[in-house]
View 1 (cartoon, each protein chain N blue to C red):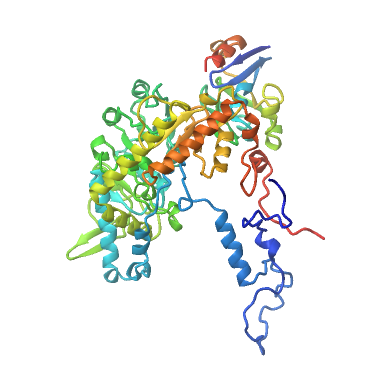
View 2 (cartoon, each protein chain N blue to C red):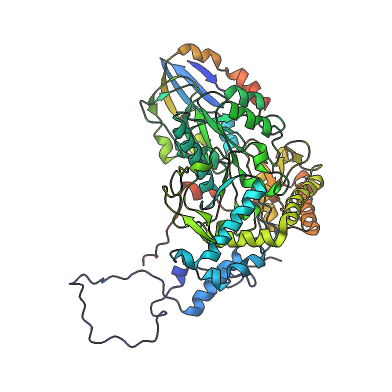
Length: 123
Length: 498
């Protein structure tokens, strides 16, 4: 299993050809209490850096971008009833969607955990 | 001294129940005899259950709404530095003029010959807007700034369609009002975001790199939502024109430059003007507001109907698309002619101030914001260096390590008797505090506000985070649970079941 991070504060866990995507702990802390998550439909084709989901907190509504090219294979339906999961467990139960990848080599363009930590500290 | 009262009231601040909770059967009614000799013709469909409306006597209703109005805080009550909203005074002269019977009693369906004065007033108001912006055409009908944006972008779409070009990408800076990307999307465009530079302006190199033959145009706010003048605006206009696109300017902040900068000289193709921000009409207009849109020659033919033209000795309202050769209006945005009440108030403001007065108002707005900036900049952290325009923007780095957030500070400001500033907007600045005093305020009121802020910041620095976490203390309700309000909203009152 590989865990990667994007500059848009998403985490990506890649295992058995499927990437699970969510927002990082830093992202949920910056957003504050999350009150709504709008997820894409299963089967939707995503392009890297294109819109994938919308997350709404008490402070702001923000787009969540696709960190990679690919297609949605599963969404976290729990978030509809309980968006607070994103605050409570952003990098586990609060995942957003799973996607198949068009080009696995794109993973190499993303940051690993140490690089993301440095990136966040530099903000 | 703290104690609770028997009634729950706090002095003369009444703990007001919902009107439904106060209602009792038999309290309403007029003194008319019961009708006799009538027969129901509803064929058995007469309502049998209670309608569910509250029953209150006239004095109860009067008290209820008076008390509610006393809980409201508005510009007539005190300092209201809500950045980007321009909470300025609404002169009472405007109200007096708008209540003249010859204006107040008009009906929009009266024959044109009986409303010549009203049409002339619309034409005069339009004329002032054209002179102040230097633009050749104006659509008066849009009902708000956001509808003005829609109007401007629909004209751009119509112009592109007339050229037979399928340009669909609109460039929008990161610091734009949220309505800008929404408008572009509503008109069928895709939004491409332009990053900001370190000093809070459009990144010219990034902008240039995004230009191409699929670009419909740019939507730029100037001065922008960081309260800064886009110094490359001329260059941006030239570049977007060279690329075959149009320049939509969000005129929300025209109040900072009116009488000093003419949008036409900046190369703008379309710009809406919020009459409430620049020309002192009430926010929301007591009904729809008003957001006229000025157009360049390139877009003027596509402006929506209706519009007023001078015809012989009188004025005429062009209401159909085929009436005027050479014009290709994209349609109609709104019933009738726009918000007459707002045109009257705006024109009253323009004429009572004169060109020199408008110029002084924009100057005073910028001066007040810079005075406030100068008073606060050593203790708060300024988001971008240098002078600001009509509003001062701070980030939350001055609160770092205090345990106090922008939100906590804003809540404590309420206890000091001020409406808080805009918080967490623009999004490009972390924990933003956007403060717009407007030209309305005296030096004394700005000083009082700054003194209060500085005292609160000193308190935060002294380590009393707990005080801030619990603020406000003196309001009818304490800190509201915004999260619960969003996650589990209670939108409807229901009677308690016995």
